[in-house]
Length: 114
Length: 182
Image (cartoon, rainbow over all chains, first blue to last red; front, side, top):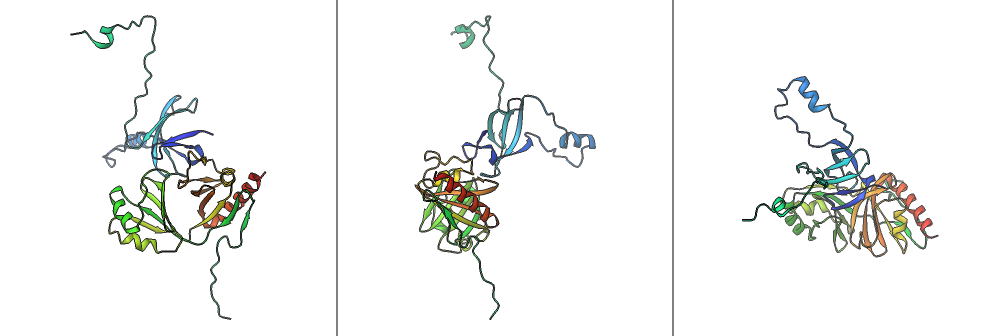
């Protein structure tokens, strides 16, 4: 069974206790009465459904009851990380891989010595 | 004969399990679903005479009264003596939400050397001693229903479930207890 880390319970709990709740980081427009139908459609209905890393809302419904955010890979179903609701999207860009041309010198990593 | 409504316990007469894990219905108790913001916890704790736990999966107990942490702002209070918990909480004078769930919930006691195994037969929650020590509590799932599990002693667990689900929960636990004996 998949174990999902709940940021409020501060431990991994079985997936049966959780329920998905759609995409995360979707801001409701502050001028909701003024926007056009097309803008409302984009905000309310249109989602990207990307293959790979997605940011989603999940709810620990049969546990602490809290909504939180999770970064999940839709291909491997691996939960990369979970974080509390309201926190900004974490930076998950992988560190650049070392290549043959990568040369680590003191000046390159630390700057020129004064 | 005068007509009168007779109170019927939800699990009256239920008894089951095995020597390894005995399953029985808990005595009636009053229960309160309490929700409050962090700044109200101190005043509520004082009014209840019980320090409301603020860490996940922890509980506080004193004189037959238990406060179980369910969420960052949610507790389940149980009083085995039948005190009016909502009235006690009201004396705190701070903003909180208190719902009396005494008759919504009922509890099943699972006790014995294989009590954890009996519950684990239907619940995915980790009940091992390191993850779930005495005094730990958690809301989780048991078979198809939601329950609150509280570890009252080394070999004693209290499973709180909704009243209408209690025959199902009892059946699942009794089956698990019989299997655990083998």
